[in-house]
Image (cartoon, rainbow, N blue to C red; front, top):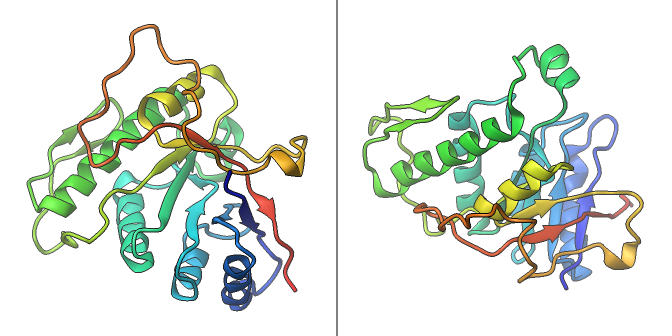
Length: 233
């Protein structure tokens, strides 16, 4: 069992305190540190945390997928994975229709299918980065067919970026078991003693026909993560 810590979205100037909290979480023995995306961006604090820690995993729980192009998310994740020395975990969420359409101003349709397409697009982009090969991804919702050397960040030492997704319905649970390293949850009703990560958990209700492991940079059994809050001191 691995216990993780949640990096709360503090009011006001939250970034100056990130380094101290991240260092403390690692010293206390937490296995992972997770950021949310409510009042602030979820990626930027992890760059600060990566520079002030050495062992603790760093992840988003969650970053909103549909508010960003897969290309934007792929670049952010790539840089954080490189900066952290392979400790970054990207947790993605769909959000709900009202926020996607009214707060972000983006159309909402078939969220589970769209999230699957998003993950496949990410992995195609990462392959292009790592192997410096042509980018040619055409999915149901996303199309990425251009990557020149000028815009390609190139290979990194740890190209395998674990993808977690958040979701409370059956389709997203199946997607987690089919394509992802695990699912991310933060349910207040879960007792603190059960909050953490455990490897080799069964995949969430897989489809009748078991999907073959994706031929991408990623392949791992599903696991779960539930942040435990660490207050700022």
